[in-house]
Length: 395
Image (tube, rainbow, N blue to C red):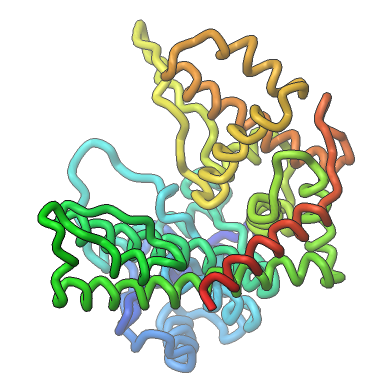
């Protein structure tokens, strides 16, 4: 986000917000060296916030039309406050809480006033021209943010379904039994016998069937969300969906992988280069080189976790389905003869290269060297048939 540089001489009010569930704490000043003015207000009360801004201008002798610069840390409250502030002409920045400058010499005091004062000081320095005091979050548009809900909700449902399945298997294991949790589980449970030839006790059966009812409800929701993705791919006209279809035209890239990559990165982020892309996902190296000590500390992991896990899985699939591509051949030359650990390290390097190759393919039209294509419609149709078969089994 582009931010105009301002200084205390222009009569600017700087304001940092510490957001809580029940109350907000604001700290305001006109320059970094000034003692902050603290005020508390009810959470999400924008009317009260604007009143406090007006009072702060009077307190510091600023005109009513003086510019206001604000900031808050990205978190549970999301980006609605940023949009509300900018709509009122306030210059706001959303700060990445993991990329704030800290003092490493001692333990940190943690309290809302301390945090708000720190943010205020950094805000003044940021608008004074120091751009490296923190990391600013790139705020998506409302439509881009809303588009991410489908695949993130699907991922949460799948996680809950797996947890439910694991609880059922744990209850069965307490009786020395094991069975797959699927559409036929009710019949399977009734036929199970323990070491003494006895059926599962009635109380335990009731508890297991309660868990299985939850599993069935989650399974239906997972299927509905997956069907909605496929319906949009078949019928949708949005430019976002065209990017998903183009990615699915590459062998090894499926519906879920293409959807997440486009919704999280390629549809709305203005990515300027491969280094920036790697940093967004947390796949950049973190070397430690000081004096005679030099070692690699691994990847930073300070990025989008949804994409980072996905692209590593996609790298393994790329090796399987695109063995003739230049990326797969590079991996085999570099890590193919190594041990298990070397191959795991190598797959992260391949994931970063693959992510950059996919970005260049969508943004510049550069087909990944040696890669094979496919018809995306065949993948969507085959997935739809599989889901229909699963739904019939549960009916």
